[in-house]
Length: 415
Ligand SMILES: CC(C)[C@H](C(=O)O)[C@@H](O)C(=O)O
Ligand code: SF4
Image 1 (cartoon, helix red, strand yellow):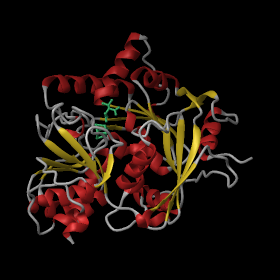
Image 2 (cartoon, helix red, strand yellow):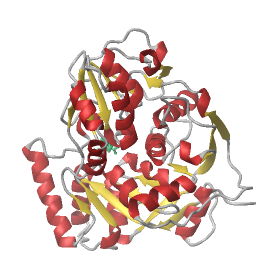
Image 3 (tube, helix red, strand yellow):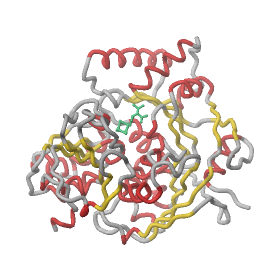
């Protein structure tokens, strides 16, 4: 019987063949942390009196959460992490304003077949490029920083097939919300999700990154896109080299399979207060919003800005609208292509390279009684600020249409 992608990746990393349920030690290709969790990682290392790191080339550090620092405590945390980075000789360090860690992993580091760990739950994002990528707590990450190894319970692989081409305005968020609506937030516990794309170029890496990012909202151990011609094209264009592909065997066995017909999908939202409270955008009724946020490691990429600018060009926003490209690179390209101009002219405010309001940190925290429509990953009570705020999640098309009308809007209504 053939191997799934999950078994192939973890088998290589373990140095022996593995099967679901096996508890195994694996070598790690990249370990990463950011300002918020990095502080704890360093603290654990100090307590353990361990000051060596396994491989300074394989460590990635980015400041993104409270970045640029909105208060003295965040600034102090950054000072101590910068000191650590310097002492350890870590080269892959991205200071304020470069980008959100997971976005930088997609742009610069993640490759098919790798095992990637980071001290952040949305590490699953790198699954977009065919890596087994998982978030872990600060102590596990500290151990991986020191040894370059970790232990993993091999998950049960589940197969998702994306068929056909996406209908207009449909992207990665709608696919993620479709899975959450159908299976609910805990179904994939102990499982990895492997996604195959029937028409690779119709579902680009940007969209894949959104789906992989939300893999953790599905409680999956990893959400891995089977690498294909789109993966190769993306890495070649962005980094100038061709990656080696690792793919599942044709006769690999999965615990379940689910097909999504992309051309039959409609724009979706997750209503308060859970990611699996999914509805069609056209069916939420008349919900007026106080703020729209387009950004985060979930939906802050060039394609998100392209879609938002298509809708907002020539229109004025009717609610407070904040847009944050997930990295400097995405900002620059969005600027060169005129998307930033369109958004600014519509009345949106822009910054870059920060998580911002996604976790209620800064740059647009929600107040009591306010309703927010956000392209980010989570809508739990208190996630974006006040516990008395309501957060709806959507992709960029619903977000931009909502900004244009001031109430939750299916973009097809504006055509
Ligand atoms: C702060 C960090 C630990 C957290 C995570 O792990 O996901 C954050 O990025 C989030 O999105 O909630
Ligand atoms: S943008 Fe949001 S989801 Fe992504 S790492 Fe930052 S806080 Fe977490």
